[in-house]
Image (cartoon, rainbow, N blue to C red; front, top):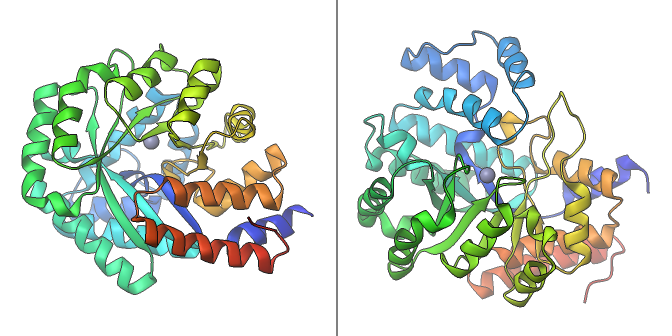
Length: 347
Ligand SMILES: [Zn+2]
């Protein structure tokens, strides 16, 4: 099967995505439009300048985040949040993503004086309008910025309470160094009592990545780990993640300056060990890997996944979702029908 055949197979396969930051989906064109609309002095003035700045970022989480946060002040009004979400669901449709769970970062907005209500109203309205327009179902996960205080995270939970039913889960992201999961044990405990589903980022190759994953399991009681690739470094952790059926939402993205998908060998190894691995695009507008079809096509080439493997990876993502069982099974049935129509046996 040539690369073009596999790309088409991937493109047409019904997919889900569980690790997608809504603030990481602003295209260079949208950035320039928002800068103009809101009178924000963005440091780069053209699509080309934005692309060059993305290419020049230092590798790794911090280089990414320093650049990512530059675009946050562009988002000012409820309409901006609506447009961003609606546009994202259009991109999901183009990638045959039928279901997604989206991260958003309330604290980066509320700390600038934007109300939690405006943020959630815009995103939730975009989610509902996008579902109607494109047939893409989405749920929302709000993330703690782990580099902020515990008090600020509790404040976010308070602000979210009137909107509780619009938000399916709680996650945690941003600068990981010096901010271990245990810092937020009480916040997670409170969120669990309020009925949130729980996940947390354990980014790749951070100081103490392995112990951070253990803390997420044992102290935060998360149901998923975002990234979590370093699980492979500890055989006991591999066994524990399998025993508890904890999905890993890995993001083998790539950059123009380093155009090979990241971490593919470790991800393949986790997959071969039977861990519930999923493939995700993270911040598709900020990496050359882009949206999910392109990302999976690159990873397929790098790791030589068969069509059967790709169906298993897609199935893992539906399994790992927080949909009710019936809805989950309906999506998996559609996936299996697609697989069988393309000569892949499913069990
Ligand atoms: Zn992420």
